[in-house]
Length: 119
Image (cartoon, rainbow, N blue to C red; front, top):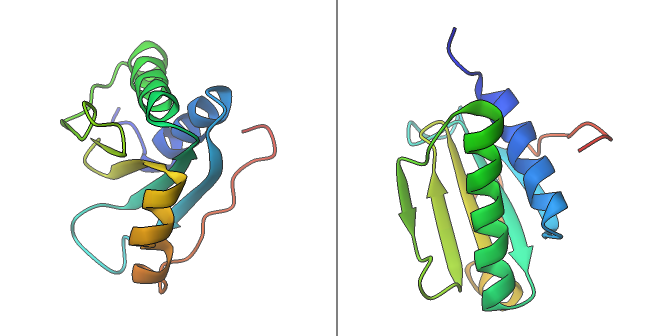
């Protein structure tokens, strides 16, 4: 049975929270683009924290769900790490980078996904 995008999103949010990522936001973009179903946005306090959050998310998704990222971009610099899981794309930003690129505004027509309280 294929893994649902929603299950993946919830696992990402849990892992990001465990790594002390902040301002975790999930945008449902499936009716706006064919690129992906969801964007998950996460902020980190420093480049070290951004990389640690991204690495924790990768490890948790592999350990919990047996999935690997199709692509990883920006890990070396740690300003904006993109983890591409196909239907779910995760953006882990430095707070200043997130404010500058403002994907929330760019994808402003996308509904925000309410996450379970346990996430």
